[in-house]
Amino acid sequence: MQRGAPRRHRGGMDEIGFEGWARAVSPRLVRLATLLTGEPHEGADVVQDVLLACYRSWPRISRLEHVDAYAAKMVVNRHLATARSRGRRTRRETLAAVPEAHPGPEHRIADRDALTRALATLGEKQRTIVLLRHVEGLSDAHIAAALGCSVSTVRSQSSRALAHLRAALTSGSPT
Image 1 (cartoon, rainbow, N blue to C red):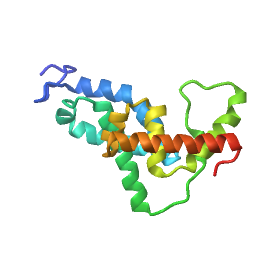
Image 2: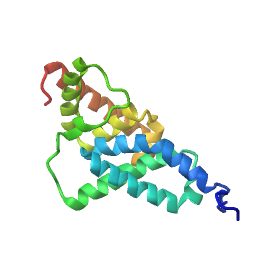
Image 3: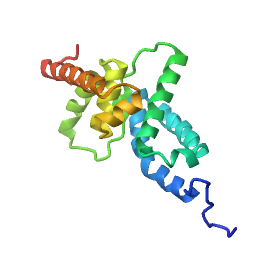
């Protein structure tokens, strides 16, 4: 085999395919993991674990219809497993440290801080659904697949979460 030439896997995908996919999806996965964990370094660790697992199973995973949604599900599951193994912790308010794709003007900082505090008051499942839908742009069907629940559960939990966020942001203090 020629040096630098892509190696073929039995599924027909090559290592270049994984590397290109990983480069493209990593920023979104890190953003999601950071929002879930509340800690940038912890989020990056979760994504590294997920990417390693994806690499090891790439011939199988690459054949899936929605590889990105599958990886997002892996991030959520890895986060939940880590949180369970550490026991219940107090939520950190370091969500504000999440890097923005396009930083906004200074006047948006107060709004962002209020939203971060309001998101921290949601339950784990509702917060995950809101983040997957509104930050990652996943459809209800993809979120349901990622969380292992029905589409109607995603919709009802999303509706409740958004109502809670609206109330918290309108009143000025999250409940």
